[in-house]
Image (cartoon, rainbow, N blue to C red; front, side, top):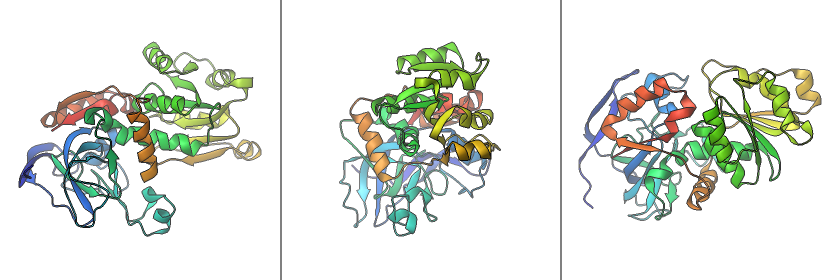
Length: 351
């Protein structure tokens, strides 16, 4: 197919927006890059943080946001051997890394001090054509629907990575805080596919029904529980607590509670990023019960491949809604009305 010189994109021209839907030049891939014709891109709450400059990390301006892009490779650099023209490819949050530092050499590419981030430090997927480092782009099987896979490129990989970081083994129990939301519902499905038992923590009967449908063995409603810690522990085998906790919450309180219901030698994995929140845990309990508290960022290249494979085998599903790219500002408006982990991972903007 002929590659045009110009394309449509949603551009934030300054911190705080607004988004401007306009034509910009189609980028040219470098020697180690691919050019992807984006068919669908997920919309994540991080995209809103990026546009508004909420994080203590310099953001590119003007900015084309987006980091969950699924499409077709239409051009590639001379050094690229991983992809052929016509392959399906995914552009993720981690757009590239140096591949030479200590972190990259140990498969911790997300921690690379020279990492480039789609829709944050480099232009992302809210445009018709996007470039990405071939080494970090994800190869998508050509029989996988591109609209359905888009949210997996961020939300799916992120929670899959968190489950791996938790160390939970098949047959053990993980408590997922925010299990009825966008990230949480995917985490629940990955946990079940990995043979891990799930206690879902969220609020409301609608979330309860969803979590039970997805295979949660127990549901603790924080809006109704008189003693959440006791209720979570009671739902675990032997009442000893969960082997691991995945924190996907958007408020601070759950981050202070998790060490109380995690099992001795268990892991508390922090994924959610509530604004201004802090972790707090009693030193004595944390020490004598040998509790592991750790953060989990986005997955590395292998995590991405494995997370996509679970989806390709039909084990993971994310409900989604598609809207034209020109309606992206309306999606951002909806994101401001709903809790971050409820809506945003389900919205795809199509080109």
